[in-house]
Length: 214
Image (cartoon, rainbow, N blue to C red; front, side, top):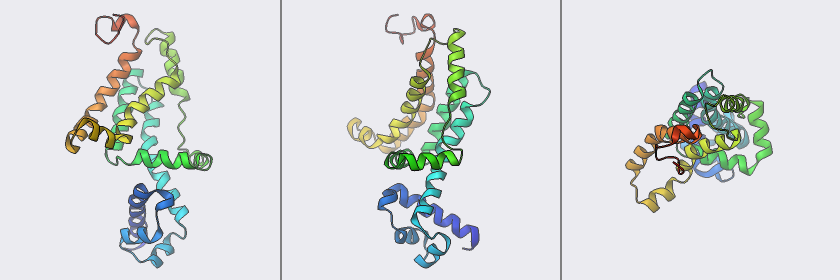
C-alpha cells in the first residue's frame, strides 16, 4: 500500500475499531493491527489518535446526516420529502448499523467540542427550511397543525431507535438476525406512511382505523 491507499486503509481500520470501542477505549496499536501495519507507519500518517478519531467521526456524521439534510432542503412535496428522508436514513444505517450508537455516544460524551467540529465542517443539521415547509403546509390545510420539532424528533426516533435498541428487540421479541434485517428494511415504507398518516387532517384519516376518534 502506498500514499492515499494506505491512508484509506488506516481510516477504514480506525472506523472499525472506534465503532467497536469508542474513542476512549481504542488504541493506536489495535488500529495498526486492524490495518495490517506496524505502529511506526501508522504514526507516520496519523500522529495522534485524536486526529484520526475526528476524521472517522466526521466521516460517520457525513454519512448519517449529509444525504438526509440534502433531502430536507430539496424542492419536494412534504410527503415525498418525508418518504425520501426515511428511506435514505434507514438505507445508510443498514450499511453500518453501529454508526448511530457511535455518533450519538461521542456527541453526548463531548457535546460542545464535537458540535463545533460538525459546525465547522458544515455537517450540523439545520432543519429551518423543513420547519418552515411544515408550518406552511399546516397553514394551507395540507396537514394538521403540528410542532415541527416534535415531528422531526418523531421521524428520526422511529428511524434510529430500532438500530440503537436492536439487541434488546432481538432478544425480547425472539427475532433472528436475518428476519430483523428484513424488518428494518420494511421500515423504509412503514415509518414514512405512519408519520404521514399521523399529520394528515383528521377528516382525511376518519374511517381508516388510524384515528382513535373515528
